[in-house]
Image (tube, rainbow, N blue to C red):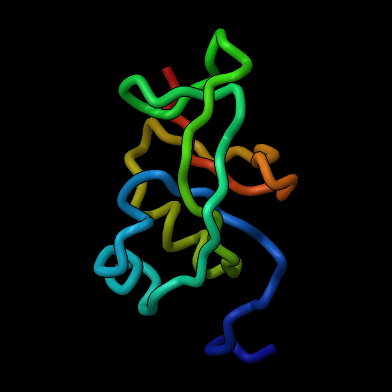
Length: 102
């Protein structure tokens, strides 16, 4: 693979905030991402996405197909106290989610 080619992988990124906005996608990824509505079950957003004590809680958002290069760009955009974790979404996809670390 040449350095200028993006690696194409089946990875997913769950977003419920800025990454859903097309202007943010264009700035960070250089293009608009194709996504589908999904949710994290057993999570809440108070004030940031985190596991909930109520297993019925849901955080609604979008899941986007991404490349390794996209994930590296997203990592560089997140604050240092956020870490990427893989979590199963309501639709059954295993998606990367940025979670705040205490």
